[in-house]
Image (cartoon, rainbow, N blue to C red; front, side, top):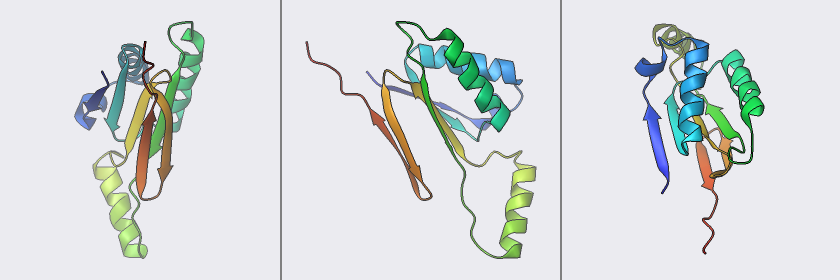
Length: 124
């Protein structure tokens, strides 16, 4: 069974980097694909990858991760609105997807969409 777990921004915003990474890795090791409202910053994403590499073994093959940000197109005024929104929402815009490498085959993204491809379950 495929399990998607949505993590709202308000559950993550108050956590420090270590707690975020622990929660992500615990869920992913349990076979869940996380849909996190907002983006991890570059340091958090790097640390997540580093810690993942340290715990890879025969049963845990690693993670697939992708982040997208909502695109605001327009003039100076539109950019200013975006910057104010990011400030007020604490950079909440966007989405981060993290899943176990044994389930998630590939995450494809382009400016208008994101696709999550999963592995086919082998028949016995």
